[in-house]
Image (cartoon, rainbow, N blue to C red; front, side, top):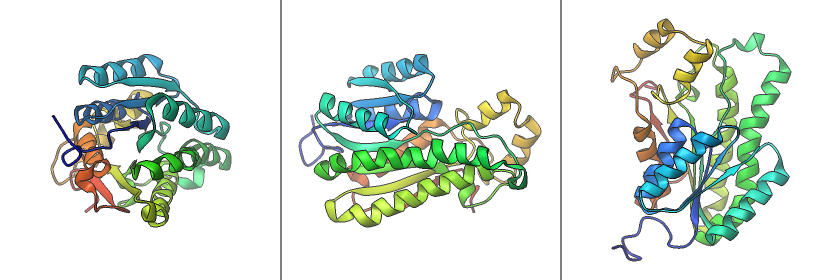
Length: 260
């Protein structure tokens, strides 16, 4: 049994996980539930996977609700945040684990319309959620954790469609850390390398990359292995919880040392 001195998260409210239907997002939801959180999770198109992620939360003994959402639409995000807060009694933590599947294209060959699409889906989407969640996070003296890319710190050729939007996500995260700290709100990031349930398997399935690319990338990882979703989830929950109470404005690279 926990009390106010040992509880990792505020007693009232829930975690809102944007992108909880993905392989990494679902594990984040499960580990948050393990640590005592009720979870509201969103999906864009994969309702069945969102339902499975919700079952993972319930298996840990916590409540789970799912919401379909296009975070590009401010009005939809405003309604989502209001509904989640009303249903759960508040929002104490925001985790952003969303983002589109990104093909590898040299920046010189990226059409402006395609870059705009990814900026809308990722950077602006994150901004929309942060904008409407901040009043609830202030009330809870809560936290934001944004999942990003280790390619921001060690650029991989032809990865600009990922790096540019995620760098924007990082900028928003740092602005929140700087400006909202006076209200007790913290903001941090987790930057991913090669994760075996992350974007790399999906990119292989879509034909954007092949095994040769993965093998070459692995040579740049000092630990010589892929990460697991739980590796990401543990970093997220550390930053989101009171264990990281004096950490704000930081990014933890969960990439096996790739960024070094």
